[in-house]
Length: 300
Ligand code: BG6
Image (cartoon, rainbow, N blue to C red; front, side, top):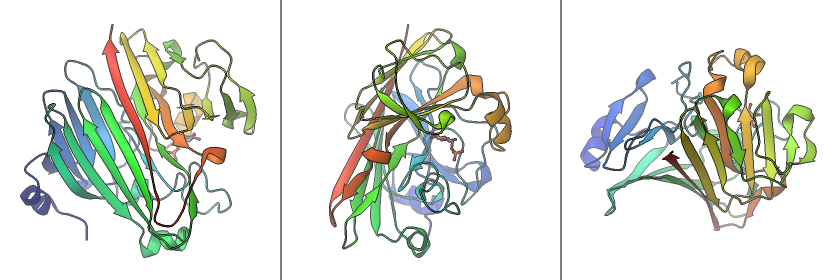
């Protein structure tokens, strides 16, 4: 049974729980370091604003807020496959858990002033019908001077399984055509805009000049976005993630996405912390894997 606002409020002293759009329950966090909003639906961080700074995450004005549908913007959690399913075209894009109702398991105020929230989800009869394995996921979110998210995957079945995963962060930028993305020089990537051809990133910073959808492989590097309009630098650091996705839908794809505004693409870029394709993870029965993304921004 999904948790109710009453149950959550009586179990946890903070954060505050409320019904957001579509009646979806969200936790509102305000502490000396930052403000944030986290939905139980998808364990979805939809807002994060470090104190004294503009919001760091992009949220589409056209996002759906509906059971069974993903939220557009913020940080969708992707598991157990990334992108379209490899063999089953009827399976949902980006796996199963971004549209599931998660449970809040812990909420703590930390000594450094940050707030730490733990959300969990596990396989159901419905997920096993599509993906025949048992799993337990825990997303630990630390809302502090940085936004830190750790996705722990535990294999609770009796056999090994392989999975892909992503923390699909939508970042707010002044104008995507003016940003410079640094940290992926020399990395190999699969270019979804060019039939998944394998290419090598040139040494210069990446500039977004058209629809861009790239899966960088075998890279653990931090990525920095230099944003001259918002006068800030965003850094995405990661642990136990070997792939990074860079995505901007540009003009035509924006028009084709019903839950994304036609004119919203200049205000966002996704720099995603991923394990996909050859960087997918195989987990023995009983074993766990934790992938972490830490995002911080500095004004200049
Ligand atoms: C990105 C993928 O991670 O997510 C893109 O690389 C995809 O190919 C995008 O279009 C958005 O996916 P969705 O399912 O949220 O529309």
